[in-house]
Length: 248
Image 1: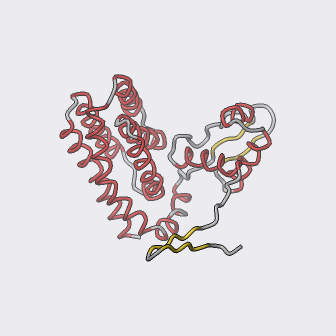
Image 2: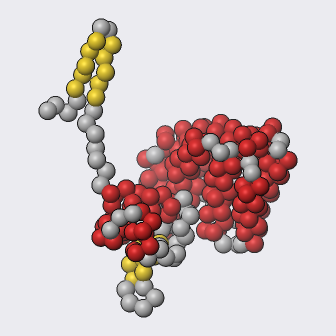
Image 3: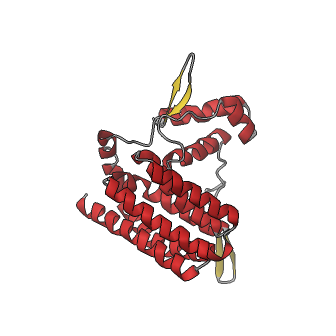
């Protein structure tokens, strides 16, 4: 059978492509890769035990073992045997040498990153505007919890993880899966470039203040203020990312 088939009726045509079946262990590996890439699983953190992951995904332990093997081959996790052993996150990169290894990948994905930066300037303010009307008390409590943890840490990796959690929580507070999916996809596309941005206590303090303004607008139910606060915040990051791409 040919790789594609064309059905023609009148002046219109429909082209069909073969369906690719994703193997279960690769799907699971991709879900875990997403958590690591977004910084929701931190370097050094242990993955849940195989038995627990098997229950969570509804598969056999052998499938989990194959999924973990994929991540191990990619250098994202490391298996330790014996007492105190388990599978631990070894990425995304945090040290200077590892970050430098991201540069070729960022250069290669320059167009994708540029498009993601431009799209973010539209989608995140819109998500925040919607969230100001749709947020619940539970959403606000979640945002405040993230802000409190961010205010207490000086750890760059943890702060970056909390930054990701905050943006995804704002999108989640809109209670629209398309906003949530779009914000997550943008974050995944920008992650390598964000890891290359210089970190400093000054950046953390500014980011935290801007997050607090966003949260205050959501608490007040002020859609316009929420939109403006997010646009100002992501605009700062956009300029930093554009400068980074120009320098590479």
